[in-house]
Image (cartoon, rainbow, N blue to C red; front, side, top):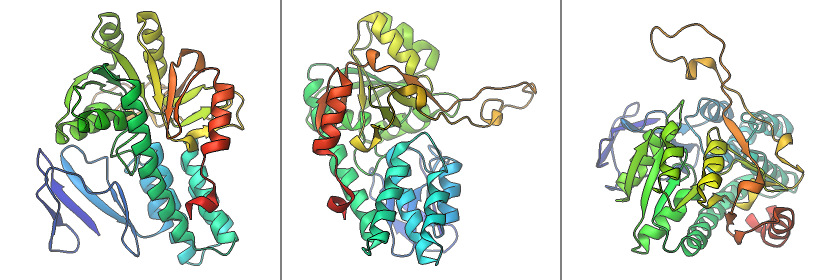
Length: 361
């Protein structure tokens, strides 16, 4: 079932395009980014925003893989949670566990959250526990982790009102209030002044399409700027702090995030503006000594050459880049704000505060 609504400002009703009937959605809020319906995982098709809100029911593991690969589902935490339910769907269809787990895990290689989520559900299944309970546990854990990140970041950034962010890291990218945008939401909910500069985030414009849409709905002051204008904003004194998300963090604090993040970090360092990464601890990969070992996904040239009349020329279209830990002021996690040296603080936080599969189910 695909549920559709026009989505300019207020979401009032959802039309069932395939099944008929009306489905109420509270205005001006959002439906959950990921929801288990009993026989499917329901997600927001983020390709269709901001023009219309489309809820898709993914009923097979192939549906889940396609949604992740085509960016209908995006954001490291949402990818992980949706992938966990994909394993559940595959197992319910009688597919072998190893086959299903491998199929889901390789869909997008950079975001380690996906592999972690698949491993949690697979571990539950191998131990004779309920895989669905494990997936639901991941969803609830993500919500709580985002809440803690928001509060830790709110305290850390007290008095800093003008925040620059990249891509989308909020309610659309997580099952909670978000990571980097979770800090923004926490500040707004506490009644603190907050103004967001959202980079457009080429080539797929997640900042202009998703971050601006989400923040407008939440009543947060937001202004979109072209990616190429961010350095000028930083050097021009228009930014108090940069806050971005993460798809994978190596043991030394090197961070893979949406391509363009590295340029922001370099400009922030030159401008003397603090640069923060906000992520749940399951984005940390202690098995990677540094960011040089992080697999970087490259995507189709058509995402860049997407206008009629574009030349047929070679394109390098990496989805992510790696920011050295030396450029990061702090990493905001559910365990608090971690500071350099990250080889010490990340390891301590993961070993002391990272939930185990048994704790999540």
